[in-house]
Length: 392
Image 1 (spheres, rainbow, N blue to C red):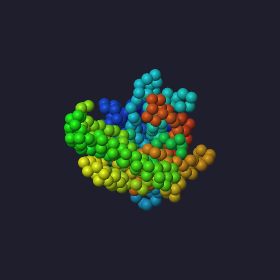
Image 2: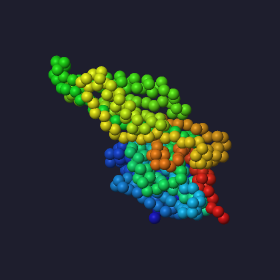
Image 3: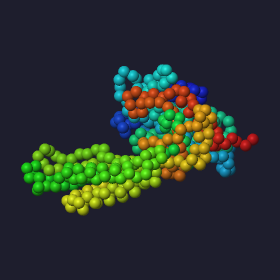
Image 4: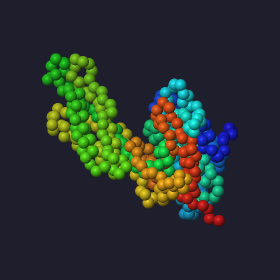
């Protein structure tokens, strides 16, 4: 077995994790995936006293769960805490800088996944090991998951087998508390027309022209969303067409046009409610244009996330962030989605928090080393406070 670095410096661990290629193969066909990094993390957790389970319902896409039981397990004392971060990354653009270098320069660790979110994986490993080195009353559950960057199959698989009283989802947030983020839903909209020769368009039904009606209607919907009261940290919801394809050639009226519609949702808006909203909008177009025919299919949908300030996990994280940072942590919302949406949907109160850095999904990515160390210290204190010390 390879001897892995001790639980001393999360930056050293981060450098080693960045040097492991874990690009998501659903984003880049043929990419490495999470196999090698899952082995590395599994060995590290075992060497630090965690019981390790590797979940791999989808072959080649493992997620790692490390559990250290508290003294109160089964007695009703102590609270269990899940720590969640993802192992996969987006793809890389090979250039002058090695995307898997893990170099530490001027206080920054460079490489793909450095901030999104191998910084989170490193901080969780160190914090969980430190906090559980003593006797805790509650369980510490480390979940390092596959596929967050695409379909979130890792967190879905974890939630089928593991529960906790609360969770910390570690995603880059510049050491600010993310207490809300938008949800999203993707739909495929197929418009059906009738082909005809381009010299006689009146004999056909132009599906591309009907797509123009949809674009106009969606613009009206966006205006209504913008006119609604704004969420305190997330602003307004959004709707847009992200892809469009139609027509066979330059001389034929298009018999078919397919659009991909993206809807970004606020807390309180469910995938079902926004689908109903779109169906009503499209049905209204059939009244305006009797030859308008459509089929709407929901592809993927994830609910929005919002934490409550009074949740014990939010209070514990807030207090420890202020202790380490020397000032109250900023609270913010995010326009994008994270696995916190799935965890909250499973009934587990959670909050999102992570390191500082730049270059998420960009050519050059880096994490601020000092923020990674601060993150580990904040997580360690939060674990100890939330899980509770064992009774002597």
